[in-house]
Image (cartoon, rainbow, N blue to C red; front, side, top):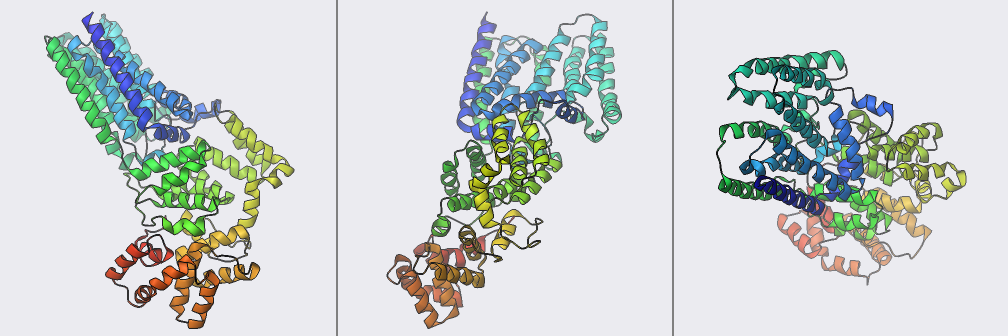
Length: 603
């Protein structure tokens, strides 16, 4: 009775704490992991997944991951499975009362593994990452529990044969782990079981490579002994798997402990529960990836997908040292609000590099999505397709490709992607919405189509898609093919970012001729005054001051700091740069002399 009560208290406390912590900290992560996964109800998808050993584990994991479209539902399912894993650990290992708290350790380690992910989650080569480790460990505990309840020797030999020879192609390394965990502790008190142990170890060492090499022609048999584990750029990210490795080893330790320490009492159980709880409370937050850029990027993607675009700019603006992806999302939102040329330099431009144990570039992470939002549909499709070929299909890339092809009016190809989305659980309505664009009147009235026709006005062959996203966009917008209202704003922004003065003047003068007397945006005024100062032409300076308004705030601030700006143009010193950062923070002048010098390469 005490053992059952101890088990109920342990599992209940674990479930409540896990769900609460993940609900408060990991909803964005859970949603984005879902968006990078893919589950379609057809045989083609099943055939694709079953091309590697252990395919049942990612297949089940991917099936469950689709429910994380609703993050709280995904977290609830994950918590339920982790709690089930803890209970099965007690059942399989026949743990005494004092060891019951230790049964939660593998589940806690799985949580640590998930929370420790970095930007590699955007480049996974494995399905069902959110659930597959838990599903695999549940298989292990079930199989070990069955072995523990077999008394006859022939049954144990049969169990080993079935698990290693038959189940390895289905559950991969989890079958091998089951065999090792089940048979090896038997040697401690039953020397007669050495035959079973020897037979099991012989199969574990020899069969995986043979079966992987024989039956899975598209699988690299070098990875035969880890088939079924989540796979994200495995060569360079093995440290990410440390909690999962420890979880696998913990099952073996728990199998031995009741045999090595059979007489521990109730006081030990209390102490053990306290130690496990304290360790989990400390280690989980410490091991969690606390990179503010990653957290922001996950929140941005979640907000966009749920239609909460208004959340994106505040999220991006709150990061002190953003990566380039976040700066680009910030500028896209400012452009959509018509505030790009008034506010873009009021935010920091000093960017950070991606902190990842994966070699990931901003373009691979968010290039397809950002091209899509700027209506560069051909470029967007290219990068989404490249990600699909390099890694795996995902809901995110499939939506982007379907969107791009529909807007490009390639109906036959679009049907391929729309059919795929219609075979998913949650993206049927998205596909139906895109189908409406097949109607010519609906298409021509669409707001994105109107923007696209304003922005992409280029001679044939004038642009290519071989460069990184931000650099390509800046180069494109600083080459003046034709000016429209929408395009002029993005062109001016690009010219100021890249210090393209000649192109800047062409646009400003063209706008002045088209709409004489119109007030120029704040940052355009700042750039015009600075560029006029560089030319050292009094007549031009007078003309520009009249254009921007001599009594305006920008002109007054410029005149107060004109001597400082002149010195910076002639011979900049760190003292003057620091003074400028204090007096003119949030201006184009500070960007020009200070922040642009600290900008990392556009990737």
